[in-house]
Image 1: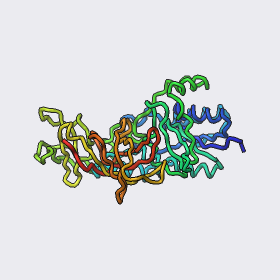
Image 2 (image 1 turned 45 degrees about the horizontal axis):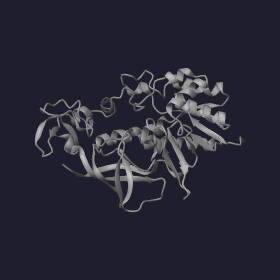
Image 3 (image 1 turned 30 degrees about the vertical axis):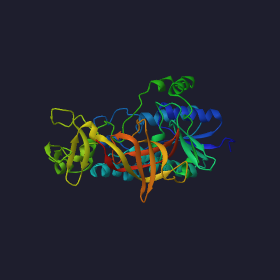
Image 4 (image 1 turned 90 degrees about the horizontal axis):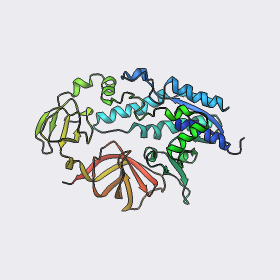
Length: 371
């Protein structure tokens, strides 16, 4: 066995995972490449279903395989469409139908992608699994493994990895966490793949390649449009303002595409699926001071002490806000030092101690709005 160990490298065919694989290969690991097929674009029915979208298409599969073959390590294609669809897509649809805003990338990482990789790593006799995420994994002196932000703040992906459990973290390598994207682009050139540095990156949900989640829901749920059309827009006091196209087609904080004229900017501040009601208010009405978070996964520590101060991020590109955590029977209550705008049930709340992720969970509800 190679003295560095054997690693199963998830390769999408893009610049990040390709460079990560070649880095590990150069460092002396025995690399096995694997590309996961999660979804058939043609079956999505979207307007970009046959275009390059960054992963899960034949061109990306071929790019990943070509890099592996050229550098002398094996490559496999892993079909996880059944595993992916049953959980990630069903959860995506169910959350919108419950009036919440899901984050399918977090769900995929937490419940599907890493578990699928580890299962195949064990079957292939691999010591580690690796991905091209911009984050770091360290081991605390308490023995627990935890995630640390990638040093490139513009690319940091620690937010989407909060759900990984200890058995996964202990066997995961993230080669790109200590590099900036500019350095990775240069490495692509140095490895002889200048075209990778020019390849478009995908920021879309992989199974919604045209970025139209509303269209996806309509195609996925038979009769949805007719079922939810014609609900009421109401103001924060319950006064009817007009009709909307159906509560699943709106998200907290949304301003554009409301198709209603009120003479002033209006924002979606709440969604009630039971009554098919969408509440519109002013930007100030989006602010909240406390929220409940459930489905917690603690990483750096095995729990918290009441009142622990953390920086809480409520969305991927959020800068975070100082807060205190308090244990509840079903998770934690997060109390912010200052009002936070746009807290959306269904999204992830991730708790940081400096650059270290101590844990995260799913936002359940906002407890208090301050005017």
